[in-house]
Length: 361
Ligand code: PMP
Image 1 (cartoon, rainbow, N blue to C red):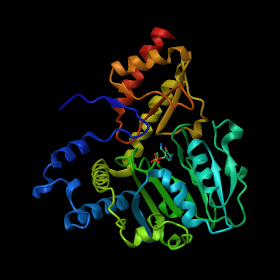
Image 2 (image 1 turned 120 degrees about the vertical axis):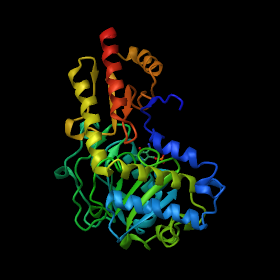
Image 3 (image 1 turned 90 degrees about the vertical axis):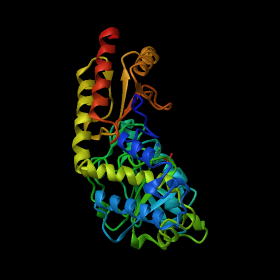
Image 4 (image 1 turned 180 degrees about the vertical axis):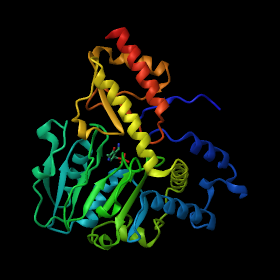
């Protein structure tokens, strides 16, 4: 086996080595069929079974109730920014959006093309370092839905609570924290997640939608973006992203072998405790996010002197600690520590950070 680096990329992100090895072993000849999954008809018995198993495993992992459809779609999470209002926001309707950072703002900008957006709350009042508590939110009386992002991948801001919206369907962008800890799916009308962080390869987006929200698409909604069409056709109205779906299925199997989402939550807690604990104990590194809103998945941090950033990154790369540069919009550093990034990776990072501080602090 070649030497693998520790990859802290925000996405496309690290995948479990066991999954990559399995895909490699099955690549040329899937289970003695003499062809790769990539070369199979999506209508073949073999592929239909692969797709169904992936869906069932995801249902098991998240405890998805039977009145929810699971869709494996294309276009990434960003396409959902339009697909959600096209399906759920009626002509002349209003949708509530919560602004907690770049991704939730992108989703609301897109929704504005299709109707009225009410910004129910914004973390701007806290410079995006804390979340507005629900008592500060101003919900519309008859919103078609409320949208929020449970984890802002760039800012490193995560909800550790689920908003209360009564009868109004809750729509959540879980791209960067799905499967990282248990959730109660029944609290949501629709959950969506781009695959390239905790699920699988990029391009794929998983949508978990309550059945009563299907069949509401506007007349101008393209067929390909209509959730009901996707649901009625088992996400195979057209050719799905077959290989990405298969690989995601391998990740779900791996997650089950690891003990499921509860076990992941324990590991993820240990990882984030180690990293934030180290940052807080240091006078050289800082993370500005309010403690209760700190992301378990994306940990932005700054060095005491940004002139040292380049140096820090070069040294990290030399040690096989990759992709620690913060998003171009915020600068500094960011360590993304998704499910496939082990405690060993975080230990190696903290060791390096301590050494660097000793030398330059
Ligand atoms: N939402 C969140 C929270 C994200 O982190 C990202 C990607 N980083 C997106 C949406 C957009 O995903 P995609 O690139 O799959 O469109």
